[in-house]
Length: 367
Ligand SMILES: [Fe+2]
Image (cartoon, rainbow, N blue to C red; front, side, top):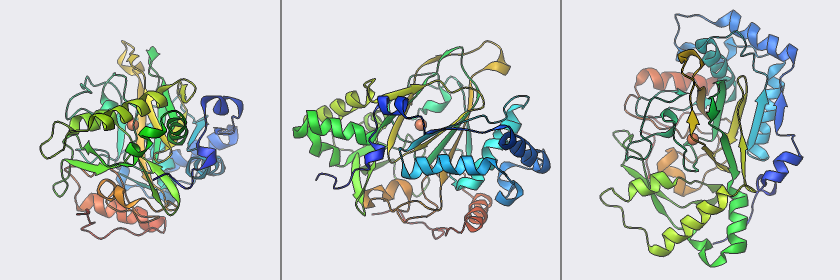
């Protein structure tokens, strides 16, 4: 099977992002003041993040810029950078809430792991990445090129590392084009299902791995998913068939292609910048980093996973992972072990504020 429609804009190369910077957005002084004002008016140290409502934060003139960036992410190149969040003088909690407030206007936040957390502080907690249960965001390791489990991913930068910690984004569609040109005989393997481990974070009603191809289609659009680390982890799980040598060769070739400097765009996120990516059009990674000694200056980013109201239908093969493939659904995330009534009620409120429908309480997992 060859995808009928590739989003031409999404199949960018490094040179394209360098030449045409219209994926980079800048918040001006007024927009920054509007964000500070929204935060000052609403912030209450006694409330937890999931107690806030979207309409409590009036983002003012900043929203026009943020929304334009989101448009680029959803319908353009699948990546955007926003500069000029008012980071100066903010403590970690204030900056986290600012990220959250922007997220509430963007979609329904999705849980991100075993703890069912809706926002992750991305910092080095000494996690060993390459184990059956490792997660990259809490390590200092270089990560495999991968997709996160949500339609839209926010990464806002509070502190950067002493060195390293470059954020890398590559277009999955450009990778596909190169693979088709250089290894047409291996292309079909990218459409064959492969097992991805859930790294031990499965909810009680989920299996330890999902099976899906790297590329699939829905309504004429192409979607991609990739993570070598999770494919290798799955090979150690009972019930997962061993990868055929030819399949492994194809995945290896593809993984090498998407790492090439002419495809993989590296950027060093600065404090006050937020990177937004579309998981269906891009893969991302990060280089190893060296942290500051001073705890207050250590590398810290906040990550949000979001289901926006205007998402497209996903391929059926995505159903196990996203729990729903319906357009505009509250879908994706890693439900984890603490998905309770309080969290479900938060998602339902947020969905209603955005005019979205919640899946039924027993959101189906496909057979
Ligand atoms: Fe990621």
